[in-house]
Length: 178
Image 1 (cartoon, one colour):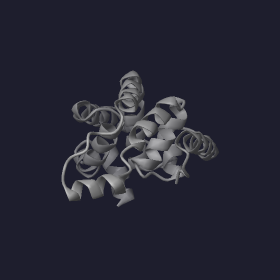
Image 2 (cartoon, rainbow, N blue to C red; image 1 turned 45 degrees about the horizontal axis):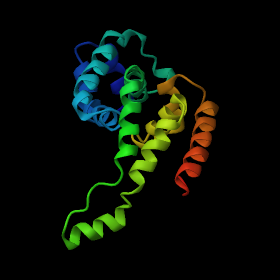
Image 3 (tube, rainbow, N blue to C red; image 1 turned 60 degrees about the vertical axis):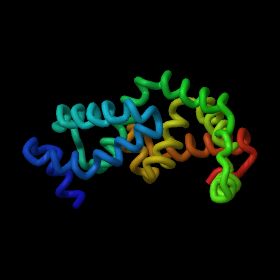
């Protein structure tokens, strides 16, 4: 499948296959990082950029998926101020109001909703490179190799950024971070 997709990137007639397979995943990733309202636009822009730059795609540097995540992450970087504002607003907002009902009370206890504000503040405090690595691993479920390809950095850089970010998140949250 990977070889097929690699070939589909270069072929403008088959590029729609790349879009069909990866669009929803990229849109969800962007929606988690920014706002759902902008996720559609940035996901579409991600694929527009990928289509326009398809001749630059190099399968030897990584697969289609990390390449698309790299484009999306660069677009998110352009919207970084909005992302930081969102994390800071989530941090200030505190836990959501409780809803009556036994099922909701049980869900509230299990889900530890209070940590949303702390986590948002901790993510906002991370340097961009560390935050990008954490969110590509956590939201995109990319491997270290895929993150390295997406960001255009070495595998060791991914590992060290993730290690530093985990330490900072652990300190901010007071819990072990995956």
